[in-house]
Length: 424
Image: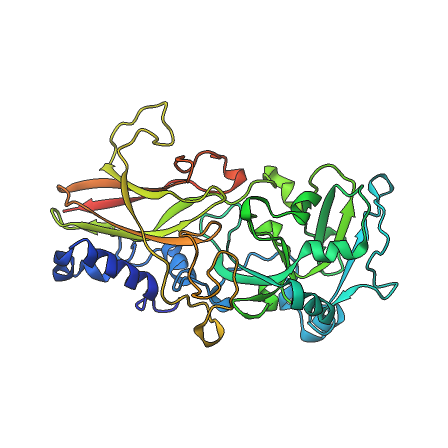
């Protein structure tokens, strides 16, 4: 584990400005302005908190700090370079086939399928030629459906998948699109996902398009991130954004056929809004103001506010309120966009234009951005000695508090985070 002392420089700066703005000068005198890390009872950084530090040291996540949950045995990005070239996992050997479902029951009519056999499969130069006219960029946080901490945050660049699909001149019998990537030439290792044809063709509710992605944070997509080309679905969890894409299949199948449907996962659930701590003490001095800060994932329903709540440990709660909807939550502040985005951007500059950003100033048109991360901070009054439970939650733009409206973990993990605080 690397030394976390230069912990979250941009987050630290944002929260420093916040605490000064609210007149918390006493925090500086007590050393609390340095933002104590979330630590275990022993005083060391807990494994889960250290993981957050690694991923959120800057607003955009550098490629080497992005968490990896790739499938495969061996994991495809770890293959030798010669094998990567052989199977099309390099920019100069990559090919994409777009075909009809081979199942006769769900076959569709394509006037011009893209196949390697016919020499019509799309190659990387062909993709970049399309990008000259159609390239798009958007910010997105990548999160695994069943994990409580996002994998990382980035600017993704690619060509809308609809531009590729329409090259095949499909007829009107296409109902769904499924896609998969390289899987070690082993059918048992295939990992696929799918979307309705309508989502491929149209961007609902001002969402960015689904893309065939070739750049991350302004640089070529690395094998670890799914390069040379992957699918990125803006509103989707990570399993929708298949890596090392090799095949797009158009089908008349009326339902999802995602591999991730296994084990009861909800494959049509978009990103949820939730909040988490990044800086909160486990031990605190009685009577002193309690500074707190963290991040929020802004889901498909947006983010109206972040709230915290502290109560004595073991306090009784109503049995019919499992999600604490009637608790006395306190609003904290959602902090403004960062001045420095980080993430290893070339020349530390955003690759404009980006969906949702002003093309001239490079600042977000609205904040917080949906499907991205946001910082938050707040100060609670001093407490009497004792043991407390501290919780944090997000409230979406519909006024619904986390984990509602979709509390099922199999539709995306978003439990209310809580920590124990000892005050003496």
